[in-house]
Length: 276
Image 1 (cartoon, rainbow, N blue to C red):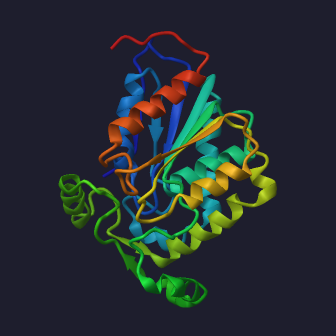
Image 2: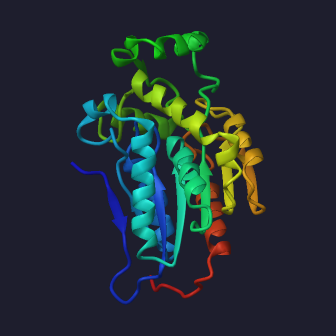
């Protein structure tokens, strides 16, 4: 079962502007779908695909590298750039980091980025005390055999939504129920790659960061490191105070959707209306 999606306007109603979405670590396009539908309603064609190592063949996560993620993200961007005048990026968690990686390579070609819960460091409040030992495990062959279990609160402060997501994860319908250590290993390598000062300084793309003060997986430090390192003159950061990591599904989701939409609209030079 493919969880990829494309929300494209009908013939004659195409807009010449698109948003490319990147989902989070061990997640799937499912977690971006409502967000994508919202942006489509604003007049954007929207695309989201499973990142390498995600999707039906979960065993592939043990062979994927951070460079595979970067190459995939860049190829998807270039594909859309060949078809649309304006291409925007938005990602959650790992997806936000990938959006930055693309901007480091193509800073003048991206119309804007909304980075959600940017994850450079695993320093959130729900991680156990022994998280300091994770680097030791990552440096050994044990990373191919150990998985870090997904656990409460599943990145969601809203208890009702959390219960729904928990059931879906148990059925493996929307993503992996555990974090393979190899995946964490590659995420941290991607983090080091992206936050290289020379690469970060290349980024001039307009960008909006949205991050929760109480993010249970990664603190606002991740977003702040990127914010302070890029050369973009048009940049902003919004801190949420009633959400955890999964900001697209938590208590402030409507605010996140609307703020992202306003950001894209404010940077678009294509103002034609798309009929509902």
